[in-house]
Amino acid sequence: MTNGLELGDVYDATIKRIKAQGGEKSRLGMEALMWISHAERLLQADELCQALAVELRSPDFDVGNIPSISTIVNCCQGLITVDKEASTVRLIHFTLQEYLSSHPDIFTKPHSAIVEICLTYLNSQQVKALSTSRYPSIWGASFLEYCSVYWGVHAKRELSDYGRSLALELLKEPCSRLSTQLLLLHSNLYHGYHDTCPPFSGLHCASFFGILELVAALIEVGGSGINGESCWGCTPLSYAVRNGYEGVVKMLLEWEEVNSDRPNTSAMTSLSYAAWNGHEGVVKILLEREEVNPDKPDWTGRTPLSYATQYGHKKIVALLQSRKAATPSTT
Image 1 (tube, rainbow, N blue to C red):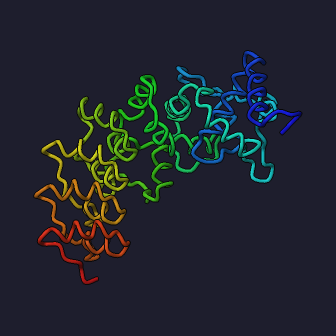
Image 2 (cartoon, rainbow, N blue to C red; image 1 turned 180 degrees about the horizontal axis):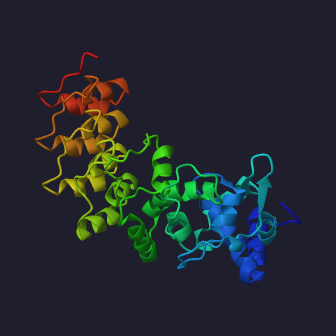
Image 3 (cartoon, one colour; image 1 turned 45 degrees about the vertical axis):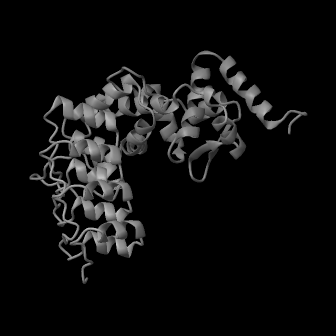
């Protein structure tokens, strides 16, 4: 409590002061609060600065637009602080996060706004030019990682028409860019590219994130390789199965050419991944397909049932055992 006012009143008054600054100061202050309160992880100070420098509908990222962190802190009127040791930016107190969460009208579609910023950045000429670099020490490397890894997470929550067009622009070509490498590296799925490797396509990416409307759009325009394999023999279906996206799995299985029992380079099928990761709904969907063999072993001899048993997914074990041929492997 400050001067007889509840914390909520203090935060309300401070946000009004931020807006009253007008112009660029107001924009920087409110967008900084939006990013910090809705980001998927703590942001580095330089990441926040770069995020606030992105100009929507511009094909270029102008490093001259990057504000200093001290300027951003001042524009936020004391509501954010920088951890000097970790160089991360956070809200001044956990009660501010609670206040912002309980007042959703403060920001207009924040996840959509973050998606638009991330995709504008990834589609910029400067980032596209980095496609042949592997792990460069460059400006914006940390923000590049955030955009690559999390744009789809935000898009799954909220996606504007403009964000959708930016996403389709990014996904229209095989995703052999640095942003794809960063996404797969973060997900422990990157093992290096080879000249003979099939690309991680736009449909692979949309299925990986589970964004139903983008999957539908890419299938509609065709040429997206609905049954195509990535470098590890993974299809769009297998990526959707790994992450438990039932809607995307159902949509992909509507196409006759999709092989729901197709193994990857480790001889693991989609059913094995679903059983391993405990995705009961996906297991049910796959078991409805006659061609799915619940007893098919991978290259180590392990079956879907053995994975489900090891990881304690009892309901999945029961589902698999209900199929006549299902028996655990001996390994």
